[in-house]
Image 1 (cartoon, rainbow, N blue to C red):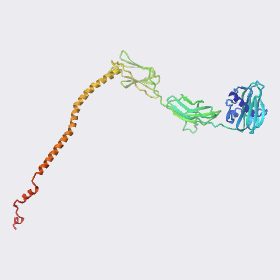
Image 2: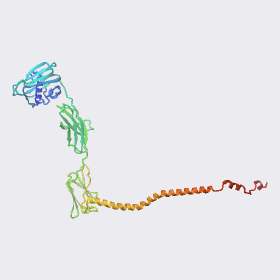
Image 3: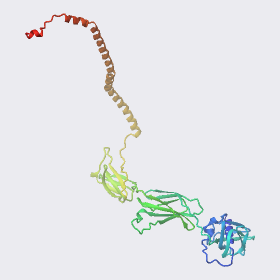
Image 4: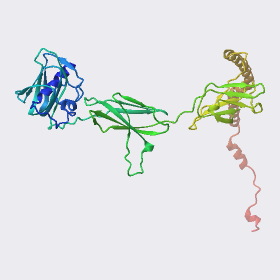
Length: 427
């Protein structure tokens, strides 16, 4: 591959007809092969750069053909080969009809040329001797071709209190060298200044797909801009924003509790080394001291103990940002004569005994109620049947009484003792 690259470079060099005059008016750092590799169809010179004489391609009897994607007007050529050799390289230029425009034998130099509508070049070492090629390039005033750069994709930012991790996908294009990463803090943006340039600060460059920023502060919002670059050309870039979290409180470590002979209580710790440590007695704040003190002695008169004799002492860390950790209590010093398995077994046995007694007591209370509930519907049914029987008996007795007509006849047969109204008035 390296051999082919060098041969292609030589071929391009041959495209520029040698006039014998140095092309001192050209900027040879902007050659077509260096900045516009898309102009050739068989691109085998990608590793050859202007003014970097490190190709070191060697070969004999080689011949390379280079075709352009469209005709090019050539104005200059640069060629650099083995200065210690008397071998010359043959360059042949072709027009649109693939007719030979001119063949030149070139040695190291810059050359002005005026070949129009060149579509291809042949580069040939016709000898059997090894020849080393360092570099060559061609130049054209008619091409101001600028590669179209593509942006990175799928940009993501994940933040914690002390870092922001950026990740992305690279563009699928040959016009890519690396990603430039810029950053600015939102608090640094002078939003109230008409003269504010709102500039990003360069942070890093990489040809990879991630970057971890460890130079951040907690509870701060950062804007990142990521651009792609190719041979000095830079894209507009894409932006992403991330806000760091609150730093957690420092961790407590190496804590020890020791009762002194005089009854005082000594509390010591190894971590943290920053922030503060709060000491609690019986769940209440007793004192807050710098974490660097590493110890504190509680007087015996201020100590509190549980019913089992355990010191009621706790520790809590406080960060520089005010964040507080969970309170860590001193572990119990009481050794029980049984373990957790024995405790569970004993508890289960007690529950069986106590449960039986509870069920027996409940039976005296609930059984009469259950009997009453069962007997109540039976009593109601019996009462209903008794009432129906009595009602039927009353109806039967009523059926054997005298007819109503006979009672009326007897009433009509009675003698009337009433005096007429006319007689009572004396009329």
